[in-house]
Length: 386
Image 1 (cartoon, rainbow, N blue to C red):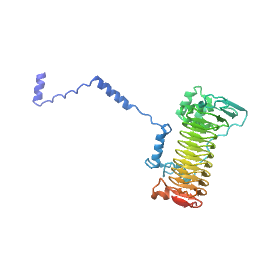
Image 2 (tube, rainbow, N blue to C red):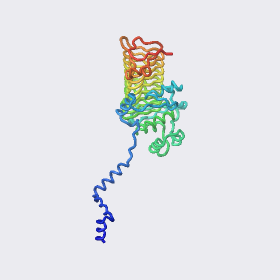
Image 3 (cartoon, rainbow, N blue to C red):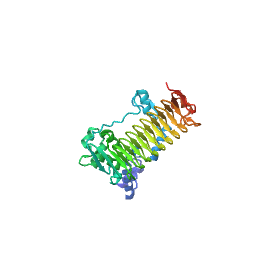
Image 4 (cartoon, rainbow, N blue to C red):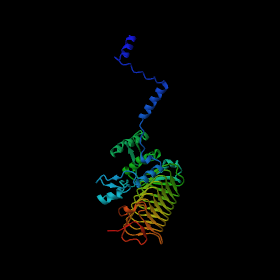
């Protein structure tokens, strides 16, 4: 049979069989299977809030320089620059840029209650050093409440993992979310359950990374946290306040020293510092912003009333105020400057707008607006208030 096959091959009647591929070694086969399995593994994308601060700053810088795709208004489809969506909605669609936070009224006072500790970072210190006071019944958060409020699946999962019986005291739930780094969950719960009349008093160091409190935070000296500092009501400090990420208060923020954050600083009412105010991103207040020294933001500075600084006022984006904008030294904006009343820099100092805008775009993005033209306007496109 073999001789017949070879004769047919030589005569060209049939073709020889294709050579067998070399057998793979067992080690190579195992390696191929391992690589194939690894290639199928999906990497869960990181949320913006989970990124390191350096990456956040780089992303925001790229957005300001126009390296990313522009935003589009969901109402009209018009392209909007990064950081300008609130302004666009207020101008084009009548939506207010600063609105009261959706916080419910607290229960009427019934009886005073003192609770030791008040936050995981306080390490159960003595009442003279830290604690919080509240009036009325302590709110309980239940799984049914979260579902009724429309909590996301991950938020419900986080709650059930920390509170298996399906219920927990309001502040304890916020504490646990802060401890585990679920700041989005804590902020959402604060907006739904509302602020309380509790007062957290801190005298000494705080060891937690984040601090989220439903009431008012009173700091005897200074406070520094590595992450977020959030209060349902106000934040007060005898000296400085510093947060590695952001500072937010439903009411005002006031400090005898500096107020500084790596991200945003936002207050439903006013922001006041005995020294300077500095934010890596934006500074926003429903009322006025005031500093004994300079005010500096990597992005916008916006106030419902006036902005006043003993030193410079510097913003990488816009500077906007419902009242006066007044500085003891220079006023510098990467984009435009808008004041409901006047704009005034220090004697022999200047007002600069459009520092990050091409000259050909000044008439659109580097507009300076006030009731009267400032005498020391150095750069920007002047437009009188209509």
